[in-house]
Image (cartoon, rainbow, N blue to C red; front, top):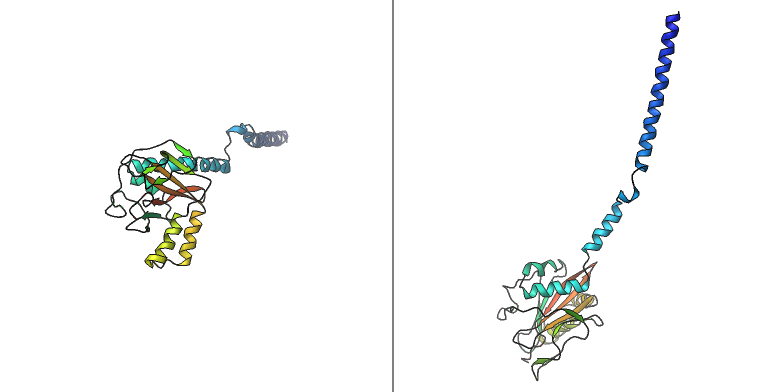
Length: 227
């Protein structure tokens, strides 16, 4: 009888000790996350915002990168800044009037027009904000030299070219497309890189789509005095 009493007592003691150990473990598990310094815990949405901010380039950064890629004849970089849906428009002057072609990509080895190759240019930076350079067909000179963009006005050369193509060349560009071109221009800026030497200018437009800037127009007709 005494042996049975001692056996029951031992079993009860083991049970109480086991319960105490389990409670300690539970408490340790609950305390563990609180012991981690807050500044070491990464919030997923915070990381995503930081990455998005780093990926977003400013207007000025994009203008300079495109200009440098053009002077280096770097088709790959130019194409990285062409939006898959917007494409790129090349304005040129085949005669007395301007025209354009719409392309999904750009290639220095396939100039528009075919007879006017893309010249190797030298970079005319740094980029400056202000009134765009104007070309005088009488003196055959620019009123100022360098690389400029105008953030106070929006370009309309693309929609105007489309309008003239309809009126003079009977191009049959429909109203939906004309409105699309105008919508593109409301989100665009024009930049000109000039030289009074033998080099041709680099005239182009960039357009904001979403949170990014893309090249949408290269104007090879401006400063052409053939007409």
